[in-house]
Length: 380
Image (cartoon, rainbow, N blue to C red):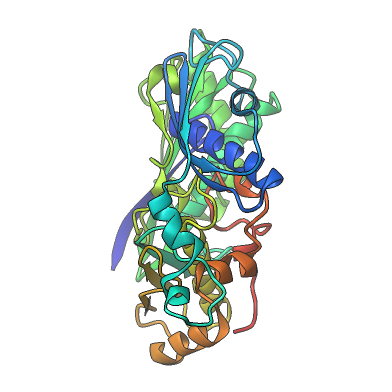
């Protein structure tokens, strides 16, 4: 049986990713000074303006406006006529402290209040989190999202190193992979939309993107005469960034995870400190799912955790190996429960999450990057 599956990624200059990067930059600045800072930072980007809101509780202070302008500059936005200018954009900051009602459950878990000997805060919110891995790529990620991320990253690289000197920061990539009997066999379609400077010859742009981006990333064995390419299909993409479309933290959660190939709990990551299980427990779920596959207990694995606010231990642990498991799923869950402390504090300590690592995660996926602790392969 043959089927097509599509995933997308975006460049760091996409308006939503700009917001994610600003939120994670603020988070890193606080954690660098105060590892116990409670941060839930949201960013909105519009024409000529950045709006920062959310809840931050910390014993330290940081210059938020300075961090915001630095983040915009790092991405490459310096033109208010086509996108946004880090030097002149208006920045509004509306930050409050974490609600004392939430802090009641986070500071001391329900189990601790009942007298149980448990060294963990409670979960920062209720929610469900999914982790996934499969053996389609070296990094144990689905092939469509893996290729989409690599293409989007390459698109930013050729802009920043002036290999293609007429590109601007905003951009999107979409990759469609053809599967036969659940195995990827070829790339069917590649879509690239990249912001450009005025008066760039469209055919030159399309030739450059194909030669210097696509052909450098996608293995030749996956491309054939029937592969379709759509490069700036509208013919013009000059106005971009927050000028072309508003941006918002947490609006690219499918890009952040598995490109729609696996389920998503719904919680966003960027701007949240690790007491928020939306982020930390999703990282842990990916770590465990990856190691189930890496240890050859299954070829494909999806894990779900669920948490209740103020309660340390997960309410449930669910696993699905889609019939690819080499031992019973019940035994895999037993290994997980025996090996890992799935309380918020257990996850934070195990993955070493109280460090300013979060801007490394913002762009091109939170999973599949070797340098991140949840991607480490261990023995189960």
